[in-house]
Length: 250
Image (cartoon, rainbow, N blue to C red; front, side, top):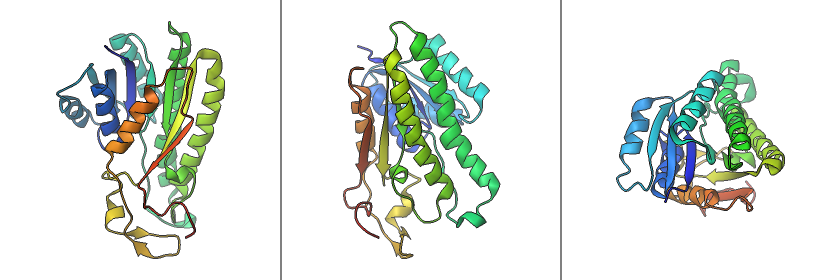
């Protein structure tokens, strides 16, 4: 039985790919969204035990017209939208703020924050007007929504802002049966997190290897959050490598 229709951004690799595939296996019609069509199509085809239908749609989430087209295509294909996993994101080279090019700042903000706003805006508008009304939005916050890494002004700023987006959508969505929650992820082993296993700068300036976890743990958490009835909401969930240096001093 199909559980609903999900849209996952940044689904061509990493957390987005793993989560989208897990949703597809769990019975969600799932739209795999990303900039490049080929990796998206490959990700859909890798799921040979799908309990629903997968669709690859190329989209730059920082461009409003492309986002509108993404959600139009989703509704035309599946009839409604029940879940958005706002996952697409990027970082920038670590540097003090005065060495960060303005263009890098704008690019990170464009994808991480403006992209999340545009996708949430489109999904919210559809969810409040469809019948039956409602749906769920899950934002990818990151451990950086709580504490920064050295030299990470653009990325950390956007992730703190995502927390504000989550709280406001959770409030504004009440009238329309729209739930919104946030998953904050620490050191899931993806291409982006690969440096953790070889050594990354710490708050005291040292380079140190950090513990990582299988990205499948994140996908399982997203499927759990997605599967709650709309009268329940996981507002914030932190999924992290147990031994990573997040809690404590340093």
